[in-house]
Image (tube, rainbow, N blue to C red; front, side, top):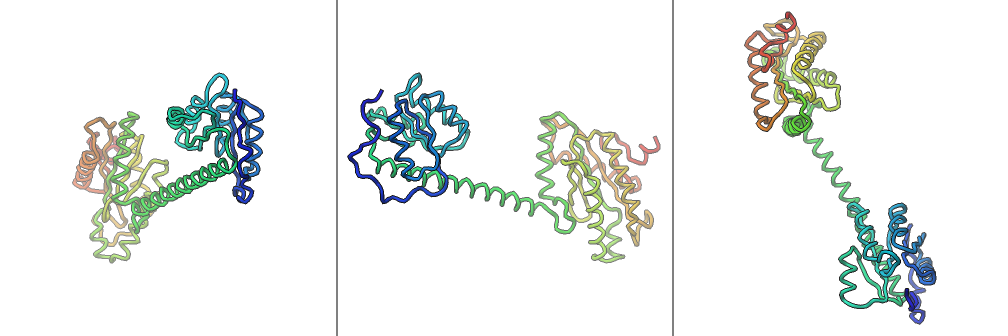
Length: 346
C-alpha cells in the first residue's frame, strides 16, 4: 500500500491550460480510493470526458477489454498481480492497436522504469505527481494518440486508393472486362486457391471466328461494337462471384472458372456458344455463316505443385487450336480430347 499521496498539492495548478478537445476517456487503476479520487479530480479538471476506475489487476484487464479507454494510468503495486502484469495483458488484448499506458509509482530507480517500459508502458510518473506534470503527460499522450489515428486513417485511405487504382488499371477500357494484367494476377491467385482447397479449376480461351474478315468488311467501329457486345455476354454468363471474364487481347477472351469440373466446363461452353448464336450478331464475311461465332479451348485440373499459369494457358491454347482445326464454332477440351459438338452427339 502507498503512504504518499497521489498528487503533490504544493505544486502550481495548471488553471491556464485549455481542456482537452473532443471525447477522451481514461482508465485509472489503483487500489487506494484516495489516490483514485485525487487523480480523477485532476483528470476532470483537464477536460477528460469519462474516467473509469479499477481497484485490482483482473478488473482493470476486464474493464479495458470492455470499454477500450484512450489512456491508462496504471499503479505498479496492486493486489494479486502487479502493474507490469496488467500492462502485458493489455498489450496482448489490443491485437495491433495501441493505447498509451502511464505507470504511477512511488518507486524511483532505473530498473523499475526499465521494467515498466519493457512490459508495455509508454511513460512513468513518480508519486506524488504534480498536477501540471500529469496534465502535460496527458496532453502529450493525446497528441501521440491523435497522430497515430490520423496515420492509420491515412493508411486506410491510401490502401483503398491503391485498390481502386489497381482495379482501374486491370479493366479493359473497350469491353469493361478484366484486362490481361488482371487476368494474369487472378489466374495465379486462383491456382493457389484451387491447390490449397483441392478443387478443380477451369480455364477457357476463346477466339471470335474470322474476326479479321469482320473488321475488313464492316470496319473497326463496327468491330469495336461487336467486341463490346461479346463483353456484355461474357459478363452475363459469369454469374458466380469468383468467375472471371477477361479480354485476353484483340478478339481473344479468357474465362477463369473456379470449382468447375470438366463436365461442367463443357456444359458451360455449349451454353455460351448457344447464347452467342441466339444474339445473332451479324458477321458480314464469315465462312461459318451469317452470324458471329467463337471457338474455344478448355483445360481443367486440380492444381498440384507443378501447375502454373503458363502451363494452363498453354494447354488451353492447344485446345483452342484443335477447335479451330476441327471447323471452328466449338470448344475443345484438352483433357477430354473432345469438342462440344462431339459431346452433344454422344
